[in-house]
Each structure stands twice: as C-alpha cells, then as structure tokens.
Image (cartoon, rainbow over all chains, first blue to last red; front, side, top):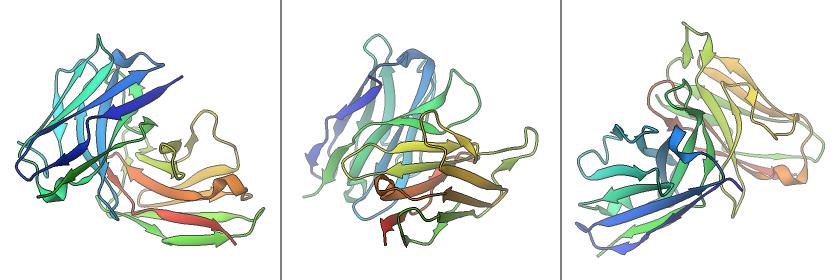
Length: 123
Length: 111
C-alpha cells in the first residue's frame, strides 16, 4: 500500500548531527517532489525542506538553512534529511510527506504522510 | 503568511454540523488561475496526517462527502455536515501560496 516510513531519529547533543531516512512504497517515488515537516512538542506544524522530483534542487526554511540538507535516491525510493549543527530548538517529530502533484505541476498539498520520527536535541 | 484557526477546540453532538474557520494573513488566491492555495488535514492519534481537501474545496479521493471546504482569498471554512464518531481528530489548514504554513490546529470532540 502507499506509505512513507521514517527512521533515524534519536537523542543527540547540541552541535551534533543526525540523518533521517524516509522509505517510500506503493507509488512512483521518482515523479513526486517530497517534503520534510516537523512538529515540536506542544507546537504547530512547521515546514522544513523540499526536494524536486529529480533531486535537482532543494529548498529550506530559514530556521534550518545552511545546517540541513535534503537528498533522495530514486533507485532506492528513499528520501533523506541530513541535519548538522543541531540545536535544542530542532527537537521535534519529523515527518516526510509527498506532494500531491507530479513532476513540477502546480500545487503542493501533502497527500501522504509518514508516522514521523522523533529527534531530541539535549545535553 | 500566518494562518489562524478558530476555535482552538470544538465539541459537537453526533449528527450535528461542525465548522472550523481558517484565516490567512494575506490572500492565498492566485488571480491568474483563480485557485486558492489552501488545504485541510485531519490527524487522529496514532495515525498519519490525512489530506482532506486541497484548492480549498477539492475533496481528496476517498474522503467522505460530509467533509466540505469553502471560502476564498483570506477566509476559509471546513464543514463536517453530520459529525460521526470517527471524525474526532485535530484539523489543520495549510497554505501553499507562498512557502508552506499551517494553522495551529482545532481539536474536535464529541459533545
């Protein structure tokens, strides 16, 4: 069935690094742009990053720009988020999501979400 | 663009209508195609977020027709015409006109 499964979360000290993965199945991963969204404890949903369907370009929220990178392996149907220089305020559940329009078509609602993976940044 | 939902929580009797409002700090209507870049999501405990509506009023495949969306520009509404027990959830609006921002969520419960 159509699903996204995140992994790689955990506890890390401030300044540390973590790499999240998101395994996609049940749809043609290579034709859809993908996003990472996060939700800090007791807070709202915050968009983090987006990568085009072919991996040619990534876009980031100001809060993570220069510290996070997004990539994908279309042969492995997997999305990644490399998080460096982590801060306490990066503590959140991280969700990968699929945009509901293929290729570069207009529209960026998120039609498939994973269950999320928890990242805790603490000393 | 800041998205503000109201109310923060809502209790409605089974079979009654539930209405959730969402206001954007600037218009999310793109004049060249007359589309509102707004979506609604449902989150139930232990389940992934579910897309309900996009383009403000287009129902996602498989979403029951008791869910409907309306509004344009800066003011939007999600309506559940006849509340069912399985509709208990947190509902979010989201704009994708300029970047991506979400409302704070509205918790819907049974009265």
